[in-house]
Image (cartoon, rainbow, N blue to C red; front, side, top):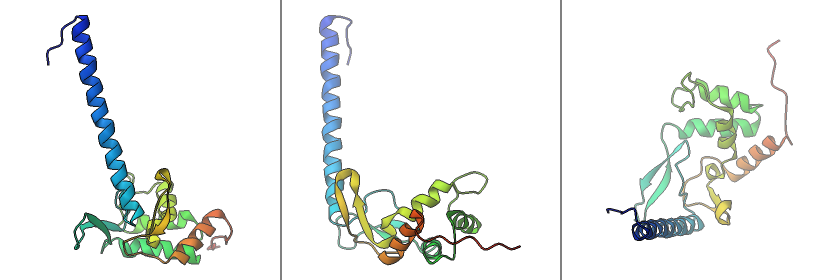
Length: 172
């Protein structure tokens, strides 16, 4: 479009910009509605968590999460280790994952951010459940295979809240 520097030209430019904004907002609303409906049906709609990957659903209707053959056992061991007390702290989980060559690292020096470990331990998706509090979708059973049991997930949350802490074993 060629807009003139006249009151009429600025008006046409404003109308066209407003129309584009309306279309973008309508598209966003539709996408959120569809994503919310999938979460309500037990499907994870966000980026695949570490240890999972997306594959096309055999029954059609989109993609579903399946455990990644390489990373799922590593994530499972970290989660179960923290739940059982084998790893006494998040720092121990971090060191375990940093020493694993398959686990993706956050930083160029090969380390993992502590926040990554916290997020990993708090994700209910690893227990086979989904939720989206931002969209008022409560906790519900997911359509994917869990890496750990819901009881294990609950023990992890208790450990994170500090209800069950034991000091790390000292070498000296």
